[in-house]
Length: 224
Image (tube, rainbow, N blue to C red; front, side, top):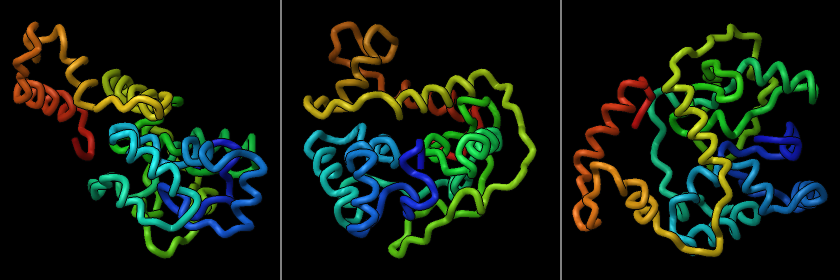
């Protein structure tokens, strides 16, 4: 999806690579390793970041090398009503065409709950290409599905901040040496707040969930 490695001729699947034939893999690995391709050009960063280390490593070994169902590695929930099609930023499409001769799908735009382009601060637009992965992959070049569309600038500062946060989390380096459970990260974030007692023995999870539901509900996201 993203960067120079993945343009029109490379990857037919929606969120992951799919079952590449030997010739396609040979051409791709001349430019980058399969691991780098998975990290930079698929949605691995969205699904693998919060699972145990052994599961991260297993998924990384299989993606790009065989046709194993990714649901064996990740909990991929059905997409909400407003996220069922691949999304794009009209200004990114203009830049892509100027730089590479055609538009392409961006991984950032396909992140769950991402409704704004964090680079151009405009609303993302849904294409007619379903985001759902299929058993038989059909390649849908972005250039053939992105037309000239009206740019809608987003002026909600909280929504813009959230979009940048999602992109930063997606792009953050992933630790493949230490197995730190996501619960430990959550409890660390809750420290010195009203959601966790100073002793660390009492966590007010319901209050946290209620506050988060209110906060994100006010953003008008497709799902929480």
